[in-house]
Length: 331
Ligand code: TRP
Image: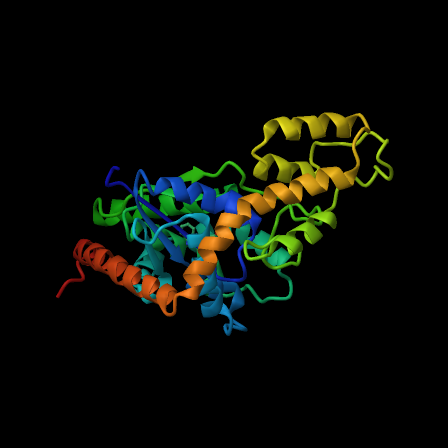
């Protein structure tokens, strides 16, 4: 293990699903063996789009942490914390705002994309514009060298590096430029065949779904619509059922055999989907078990985030001491 730091966060906007497992958590878990890892609940980031109804954020936060433990993250080896419990993030964000041109933030592609995608929300706020810069504060606070993310976050880290360079040019070498660590499966499609699985629509298999629910959802999954009978050759590429087989079925021989027969019109959807549901349930069984054990211990998850946030805050205070000195605001 090196003493290099890894930092990543998730917005507590809903239940976690298979997209989070393949796109984030499977990336986060093995990093625990190599780095000093900090994983956090980005509740202020959730507020940037959910400010009109904040009632479910803390509930989602604790459930998400249970899912992390389910997926194999270990609060004894990694530091789990909550962004708003380390208010120094807001101070560093404010100082970064002083040196970051508005145009840099307006240029980040997700800014306009999200405004178009979430038309029912007013995302013309300063908070939403500042999203990637708050993220910059999140990672530079801990001197993160690496930030495991999906490819949708690469532009945010580019902005982060630009902002850090400008800050360091003005105030000296105080902040570390973060690099993304891309996950292998960054964009799992939704089960209805949408481009990306998303927490906001009923288009997902949750880590908390029981085996029967998984079977039911897999049976409903979108597949090749041209294939109205089992003897019609089907398309594997871009077919979500096979994308999920690739991601979750460890039996590559079985997956190859299904693909060959699917292309040849020699397998029914029922067989392909039954095998997929079995594979997903085999992946989720240990996740469910660890998740349930964490939830069953009264007060445990709360203790984990309180203790982790206390630890994170110690480091945040050291960073802010250096930053305040660099900015020459130490009295
Ligand atoms: N923007 C990230 C996402 O939507 C969440 C996030 C907030 C984050 N702060 C971060 C990720 C810092 C990595 C590092 O997935």
